[in-house]
Length: 303
Image (cartoon, rainbow, N blue to C red):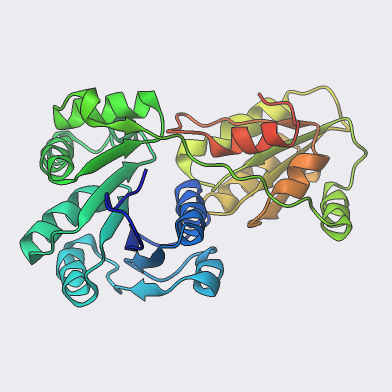
């Protein structure tokens, strides 16, 4: 799909909160590369220019820092950007950007094509935020989605969630699964580094990859791992986030601290997939589990 809806070279702006090392951020970076390969100009427009993937984006694309840590300041900053840069197409990912961008573009008088894409189940993500927030979620999606030219969800289940919130027909949305490009074959050095981190023989290596946040339910995975009878098994977490210290504390409490490896964030986790015996995802819910596809691409069994 050509997001601008017109033939020829276009300027495509990708609007994100930031470029932390999450799945949605990685997907948009991969998409940007493909848009550029197709001959389009691409730039990232960030609420805040920060995150593990920022350096990678800066190496290939212009990055605009709106410097708006609070959402309420975003409409004014985004309107200024649209008036100055006037992109041909705007891709906004993740609520509330997916509803703010179409409204701001209309108010700013800039008639570019707008595509909004959700990567998470909003009704599940915000189910505990109360009645008023749910009303805001429904009202904002009902308006914002209708003002966009294209509405994309990364799975059919996610489309049903989006359509239900906005009181629209699912026929008004497109399912486009997340792209998971094949990564280059890891170097011998990268594979050796992964092997060194495992510090255990193959056969009982269990891997999970993802940001350490509540939806990933890493404590559940840790509790399951603690019940394994195999003392030679190792559980590796590739990723980082606010839940790291709590996870370490739980590992100590469960008596498995010496068999749990926190490897931190890695922009390309392929060496870990290739040296693991099993990949496990314990998320409460996912819009589209990129890591499952990545593990399968490496031939790693998945639970």
